[in-house]
Image (cartoon, rainbow, N blue to C red; front, side):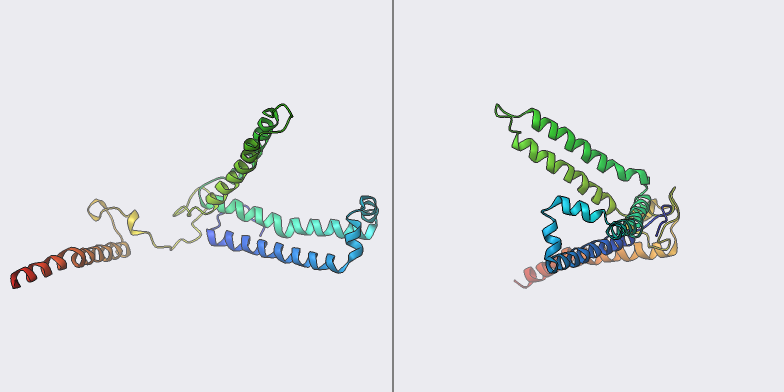
Length: 220
């Protein structure tokens, strides 16, 4: 749960990400239902002084502090740990996760500055640059999600052993049988089965139609 070393395969990461997503949705639904049933709390939202005085109360302050600390310890730190291990599984360092966030911050800052400096005579920022200031950071986050979806490094890497050490090796990675110096028994059976299937498909698609055409021509 708090392990930042080792590797995490895609299923381990995305199942936990789904758990965090469902937990967030449930928390929001519970909060909305609670607020809708307590109109006095909703009235405080339009009164900043009342909110500040409420937060100064010891019991309310303790609830806020404990809930925030619990959320960080039970949700965000494990999520950070499994993200680091997922990056390790793809052969990347855990520090690599800060690259898309740094890129998104730099792109948003640069594009916002350009949008503000490229304003017209009335000082209005350029809509195109403002749109780019919003979309480019989103592309950086999408890029990071794609990285988390990449397949695992097969075998051991510098971050630890393969989470699935007995996973079958794809036949396409074996190369042509004539160029493989050593081939284990299981891989040999996979290659033989693939070659047999390719031959049968070729025979049905090319040879049989040609035979049928020759027979029809002889009959005529």
